[in-house]
Structures are given as structure tokens and as C-alpha cells.
Image (tube, rainbow, N blue to C red; front, side, top):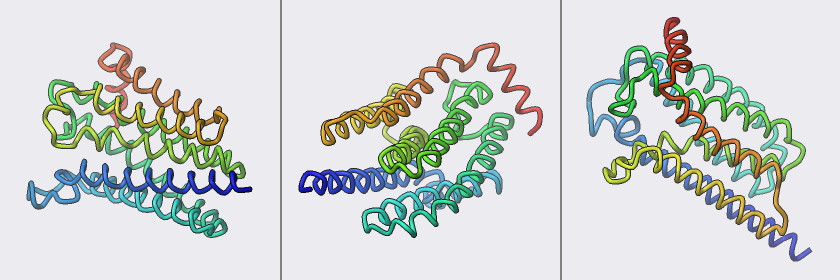
Length: 241
């Protein structure tokens, strides 16, 4: 029983730390372009769609923290009831995020890295949304198996780290490019898997599979970016924007 209590305490610390880290990285990464934009750049956002995307993603960060806190406080019933509302929020994030990404690919965006055509870069945010849908779908599927559910939810947060990390205004790190904004989430995911396995004495296969799928998605999108097949797909997608 003592060991079980210790493992539960470890889980609470891990997920609360992850929720806090997620929030801080998002706040720092998007401070200049969204949260404190009026301080750094008083020009308005390019469209209402971008503002909606920012609000929805901010709501996701807040709800993620609330859900983690509810579990820590053992308010499981409220956590479950709120969960279905979060599924609805996720659906809005995917729809609005897709529209925002396609519009940015067609008309250009300050968020696109210099030197990379916007249509080529479109594969990055679209894969973010795809992995979000898959990981969240898995979490919903495993909603009655808390071990798998909470680990997949943790991966949804890690999945959204690259856009924020890429915007942290530290020039030497930004110069590293994908090795930085995809590399750090890779390290975080593998570290969490290893730490979790060490503390619980067993490797959660769903957690490992989700982490490897997320890491593999980084490789796939970089490999396909700029390819003839992807550029044809991107031109087709942006033709509807």
C-alpha cells in the first residue's frame, strides 16, 4: 500500500510539473506574437481566424491544467464530466487550426520560418493537428484505463510544444531549427517514458507507442516537406482557402 501511495504521489508531481511546464513554454513562446503582442508589435492580428485559433489553444492550456488539478484533488467525477466538453473544444481546435494553417500557407504568415515556402511548411501544423487528433482519440478510447489515458493526454501537451519552442526569442537556439524545436519535445517525451517506467517498475506500452509515433511524425514531416507529392497536396488544399 505504501508503494502504491508513493507511485500515485509521483504521478501527481509528474503531471502537475508537466502542466506547469506546458503553460510556461506556451506563454513565453507566444508572448511576442499573441499574449503581449500589443507591447512588441501594435499592429492587429492578420485575421479573426488567427485570434480564434489563439483563444482556443489558450483555452486548451487552461483546461489541461484544470483537469490535472482535478485528478490531483481526486475530483474524478468532475474530471470526467468536464472531459466531454474538452473533446468538443478539441474538435474546434482541429477545425479552426486547419483553416488557420491553410490560410497562412496561401497568403503567407510571419510564423512561417524564413527560407521555407509557406506551402511547404504547411505540413508541420497539419501534422500537429493529426497527432493531436490521434493522441486525444487514444486517450478517449482508454478513458476507463487511467494509466493509459493520462499518459496519452500528457503526449497531447508535448505535441503542442514545438510551435511555442520555435518562437522563443533566443537566436542561437532558433538558428538550430528543427533540431531544437523538435529535438526538445523528443527528449521530454523519452525522458517521461523512462522516468515513468523506472518509478512504476514497468514500461507502459501505450505510452511508449504514442511517444514513438509522435517522434516519428517529426521525421516524416521533415522528409516530406518540399517534396513534389506534398507540394501538390498543399496547392490543392490552399486552392479552397
